[in-house]
Length: 148
Image: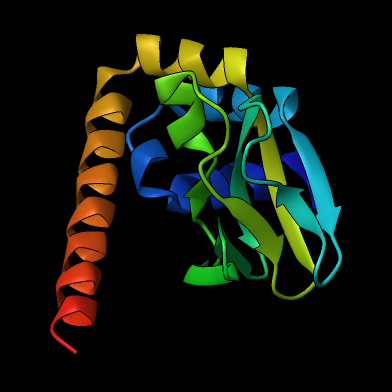
């Protein structure tokens, strides 16, 4: 995958749409493209939050560790951003992310991610919207589970 292809992939991520192409090129250049095999973990629940990932190709499962074992709460595909919650809250990972098939992702270092948010307030707003949507989905799932 070329730098230009990575820039095009980043442009597909809603929070990066309004970012200047030169800045996206810098982001792609300073980020690390990583490959995950089917079943390989991006990170585990409780790990330090040191980076965010943009899934370029493939799928990943979001797993929560519970006393009864891991439960899958979501599956993410291309252009999904993962790992940003721990960076924003400065807390350990709240879930495990595991490749559901061979997956390529762009690893964005915590420092670079936070600098982007400081320079582009519209990105912060886009992340807040995405987090609010996730919270709404989780609340709806909890209501559905409690009524069954």
